Length: 95
Image (cartoon, rainbow, N blue to C red; front, side, top):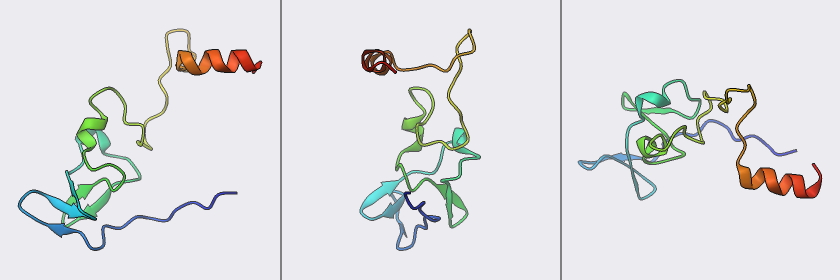
């Protein structure tokens, strides 16, 4: 069984004019759609996502795949949307 990671801290992060620099990456504050996610870490009264440096870009094409507060969307028939390529591979294996 895999061991679950603990809470991530932004220890060693430095606030600069460009933004928050953490391990050589400039991080942007979280998007309003990220509110409620378990991955959010506060740093000097501003919330950041240690998993992805530019959270607003993850929400640009739909739902962020790292979001812990959003579940898979259901279509009109009440079934969870599945990637068609993955569905065809599962069907070929007999699942």
